Amino acid sequence: MSLLTSLARLRALDEGIAQPVATVRHCRLSDRPMVFIPLKLSGEAAAPLAAMLGTDRLRPQLLVVAQPRNRDLRFAWAAELAGVLLPYIEGFVADTETVERKNADPYERALDAPQLIVPNPAGIAFTRLLGRSTRFRRTDGPYPVPEGVPLLGRWLTYLAERAAYPGSSLMTAATEELARHWASGQSSLEDANLAALLAWITTGPSDEAEDPLIWPPAGPATDPGFDAEVLAPAIENGSPERITEALRTQLEPTWRLMWQAIDLLSGLPEGAGVAQRWEQDRGSFSGMAAHIAESAAPQPRRDGAIAAAAKLARMERAQAAYDVQRAYDDPLVMAEYRLTGEAFAGEVVETVPDNIEGEGRSRKLRPLVVIKTDDPVRLAPGASLGTPQRRGQGAELVSAGDGLVTLKITKGMGRGKTAAPGAVPEVGERVCYTSLTDDFQGSPNLPDAEATPWTHGGPPQEYVPDDEDAQEEWS
Image (tube, rainbow, N blue to C red; front, side):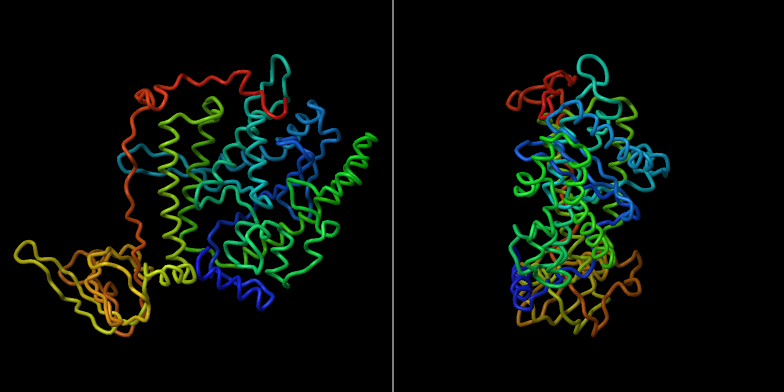
């Protein structure tokens, strides 16, 4: 937890209301998100009990497993879920745009992509288990499952894995996004309670928000009291209507909270970097759709050594880019780096826009800028700098001391012998510079999968799903 976030939590506790820790929204909100609230049977890892989902806040759909321990009923429920989710997901596949790429063939990218919003990270984890439990199933042979169930499993696996990708918005948890934009006066563990977190943000802490009789848990786990006193007797009596109505009372309050969370987030302006990350989401979604259209095998249970290393490298670069974009988009996020000395802000007191370095053909325009700042500057001379005010511009720290920082601009000035208009800050202008830049290390040179060294298991065998893959929690 950063120093500013800790301070915001203390202030929230003192004032009795959550404090904003962001000025813009750092996630994409779809025009038509799919809200998905799953419930699972207590004591089971991935046995579904019910789900409430939909894109219309006034018309939620409730899917219930009347006898959760019955395998056929569980897969019938999965087929119902596929009947709702698959048309929603596949509805984004047809409309595409052609994207030109340097030194690569163009490809078709979806104009928009689906978005699943669940109440909390546990909902994402359950979705991942649900996908793993269904994507290897067969629609023919012994123990067949209804059509659409394996395909549903592949999409759920993809969305749950994409949720771990920094900056992705294809699948998000409401509590995580709310906590990323507001700091409550409770612990991070308590922030996982959707009702309690929303109460802190809107009206202040409330005992009612933590009362499971008023605001049941947001899933996938259910309240033990409800399990013992209501659900278990209903299941023993074998009354589908009674079970359905009991589960409706658990899900409808969360349904209302989910849309309240969406409204709160949509009230914040979207950060400038969100559009670029959504383009990457759309590209990833299009790639998955093409993979499925080619009738390729479902995702393996485990990645091979090369695939895992490549995935880790992509996620590390995505995390670095996400951190930079959030800081550049949001002064409150940048303030955390100013406290640590990785960024500084101040007023321009002097400029030398025509400063030249080198002689003859090596002469280069390197404007100098002197900034007066009260921030601690813990950067060494020669450090590369960037600025949110002029994205794409590069600078280098020359010296820092006695509240004055001198830097020289190294790129982003235009191609002329003099700097382009506006490229050099004006005297009196307030600016911010930081060592956070998007000049990241390129992709590692990994060998082909066939060249995997013996220390990492050797070349992987061709992956073919078998019966063992299907022996998951729903067997």
